[in-house]
Image 1 (tube, one colour):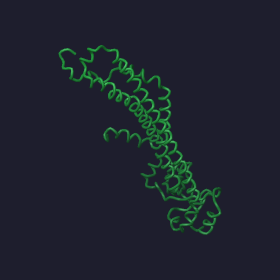
Image 2: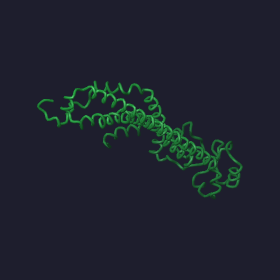
Image 3: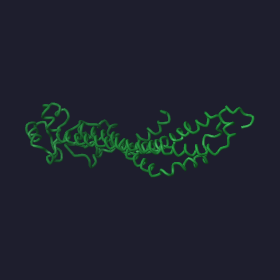
Image 4: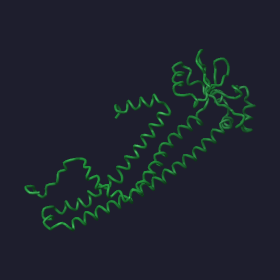
Length: 288
């Protein structure tokens, strides 16, 4: 301190000090159980964050849009197990069963996506649906024992008739809506506990650190206070301790949550389309 104005602020030589971090972990360790609960809450919250958009995708792909399509495959093109022959090279295909690579190849050949169709399954059919099929039998065709109607013919039906044919899909949409609400409730509950636990941990760590700082200050000689401004000491015991608490209880936990979220997003992306996911990863540095 000699040769330097006592009002001059200290200069930190390094951005990271392993010894200092070990000393900070001493305050974290007594609350490791609470941190474990916080990480469990983070996993649940992250899973809910990933499930909500995936549920919306599922509803759109399988229930709102017509799930089947009619395709005219060129000669030599294998239809695959998911295709049901209609006549000649025309096949009825369930969209969700066509893998991304096949869909890309068919799109290049100009046969994908074909004309969307609605299949009326006898096992899940209601009297109202059977009445519509009987009344509009000229608009329905069969493939592999399945009755189906294409999107153009479906659009020509009356509104009540379309609603009768789409009743199973509407029931599934209602179920998914309740599931969406349930996931939201779980997300809110675990978010509340996550924030509450972090707040409790932060306040306890901050209290322990301030008590130790105060106890240490009480043991120092008077000449120490002659060389160090009171304002600086108060700042060390209040603002700096609060900053350390913010780093330990919020920044690190949020970092872990973001890592889990990114990993989950990557898993879903690669499960949907490997090539598109790889392209997005390669373009990410340029976009950032």
